[in-house]
Image 1 (cartoon, rainbow, N blue to C red):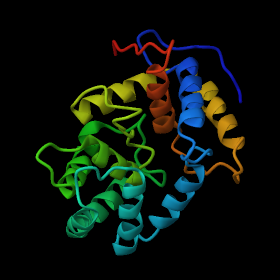
Image 2 (tube, rainbow, N blue to C red):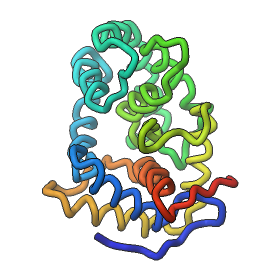
Image 3 (cartoon, rainbow, N blue to C red):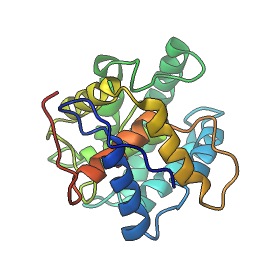
Length: 229
């Protein structure tokens, strides 16, 4: 695995040191998670969205939400039914966002929370809880637009704010402030290639995945979580 210098912009958690710590934690402590850092899954997700966000897509995606432990506190059957009622809205909005941003769709570094907020709110309505679940909504939105939404996971990568919009904005600022993006992508690419996998997906969400891993790494020993952005 490539080990880079612990470079970072002052005040940011996005650094080669935190990325390496996040990668190491994933490999050592989450052995049931794909060792290719979901490279194969992102290939599958891209294929699944080819015909839009219809019933076939939702059947696969709702099962994936269970696998990613996003349904805690909610019934899988009820969540599936709620999702069906929201599919037309999700599909129309998803296609509009892709058209507006080009073939690659919106990306963390180039889009805005104002542009994405409605999708997160629509996803939040599917899991009907008294307190909205940032875990569920961020994971579902990540499945729809992996390059735009950073995953929140209560166990390993909790949000930097209870408000996901604030968390997302901080993540975007941290990524855009990093002056060593090529180095960071190289470190993660080397880790992906160590797993039995095909070539890295052309749709791999480098920015959101690196930010997620840096957040994980910042919570490990010697990975002091520095905010200030």
